[in-house]
Length: 217
Ligand code: SF4
Image: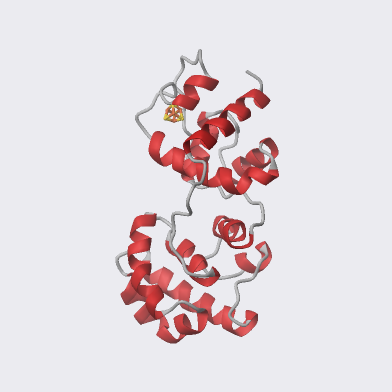
């Protein structure tokens, strides 16, 4: 099967399964969305939503978050992994947003990635969901699926992102990013599959026999 046929099947099946994929992190504005994404590093979205349901009632903009201070922010988020570091990030990034951007979330990779706790993936998610800018943030689910569907040879997340952007049309990136994540969560666990079981693998690799090795990023 050539690459074009393969990506058509992937797009169609994901569209059948997830025609309107919701954004899994709760937020009330661009600032709280940025905060939720920063908090989601190495945590489940469910846990982040539990924590932010209280935090965002107290601090839904950078001025309020800054005035809480590191210790009080920590007290709100201490159920999350890396809570001490994340509390520091939230305080520092809120201070920068206040001082430099009038409390607004900047809309460029350069400015977002300069904020504490904001790496390339977080910046991509914010640009995509807040500003509608086409990006393809690659998390562990997407990286795994891209390998198992043989859309990339790369062992790095960066290479996977480059390959996915080359293969799929730009106008689909923001939606496909969510569809991949939902599919990965519901169908493709990190272990326990020989690469022949789910509906998409069965269709794009009808004769696959050898198990697929997953290379961790
Ligand atoms: S067949 Fe297995 S490895 Fe392939 S995408 Fe489905 S769940 Fe993942």
